[in-house]
Image (tube, rainbow, N blue to C red):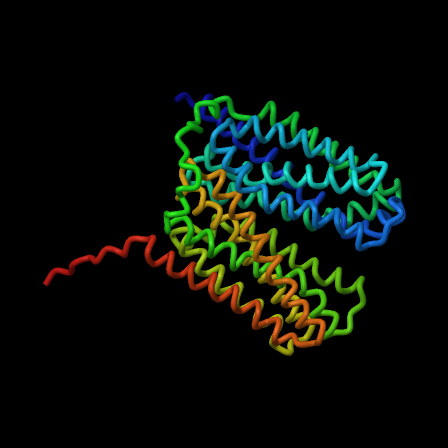
Length: 402
């Protein structure tokens, strides 16, 4: 291969990573922006906030249920084309919700959007595994996950500003426009050599019998899902402990997003430092347990508690790319369905832990909530450690001369 061809492929790979990061940014922003729009949507649809919450729960439910089956589909057809279709579908969903005449139609469209996002996110990471050289998987996954992180962090703020300036329809229209732009760039940037990737011969769901896949899959679902669950309730801990108002709680929790972004960008460096993704995940889960425990159980000044929150975000941010890389590599041609199932498992853990822990926090029992988190994090970390021990060959023993 000539140097000019090598440069062209490298440039095309960078463009692909950019458009994948852009795509998941709009998915993340669209998912979390509703937290800033519940009251305007209540007024627009003449409904109470409980009814409006169906726009959130219907999306999450559709995503969780459909992801494994759509991932199964992505292993059998061209992933690039599937991503393009999903981006257009997500754009249609946003415009449709913006001009929905009734809440029922908006909820139905939100379900449609959940199906589209269930394609976009796992397919984006499967494409990285297909196209990007193996040595760059962790850094590439981290770069794309940074797009998701920024979407989650900035989505509510963007939605709030646009709603105040131009009305509640504006954020949905912006998300649709962003997905259309992503579609146009992706259509041009999708590597032509991608058509040569073998998409046939996937095994469906036979990977469920493969412990080297199901073990890290379950581990990631437990520690990642529990870590996110604990974060979703961390604002209540800050409010109870330091008597902060809503504005100051929101400002305090931004340090988590900063840590998350730093972790996304540090995944590759951590892999190099430890020698493998499996070892880096042992470090990550240890840091996650320590930071969550310190945040919930220690009587620290506010600065110290926020430092724990930042480390907590960094652990999740570094762990997700490495865990995704491990799953994509071990699942081979079934990577689409495996990565999609990982998303579903993560949501199942969140839906299981948040109600139990929130009931404990409602009574002021922070230690009880911490115990709930400890179960999920502890089992996930134990599985991660066991996986690192059985998956990696022992270090060679160098014989010493007499």
